[in-house]
Length: 157
Image 1: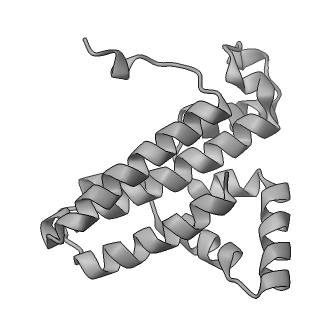
Image 2: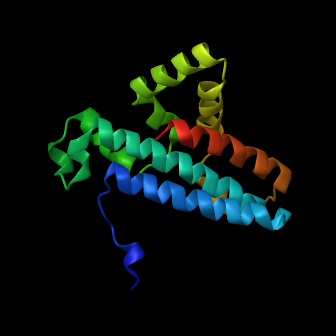
């Protein structure tokens, strides 16, 4: 069996490396220009944000970077562990990252950007269930989404 299927505990650096690889995968699909590949761009773009939020959670909770007995964790600790290793709810992850939210809000106010609003929008809309969708998006929308991801990933590092 391929080693990519092994369950592992990630460091923040590893999670960011995975995010960059998925971004490059999404970019490659976007460059095809084929509408049939647009869903893949959306899905992989969301995974980029997921990996970057998980990296931030791992930095905030360094004890989660190694094996832990989940049943010994506090209820908050169990929730964070689940967000990192089992769940995919971007809005829930963001809720556990108040420092990141504050940093983006301050940047938006200082530089008149909309990073926080863009991130909140992606977190509210994107779900892992995109991988099962029988509907097909158009590449123009997928490319716009990936442009948002590109801008955000620079600030989520």
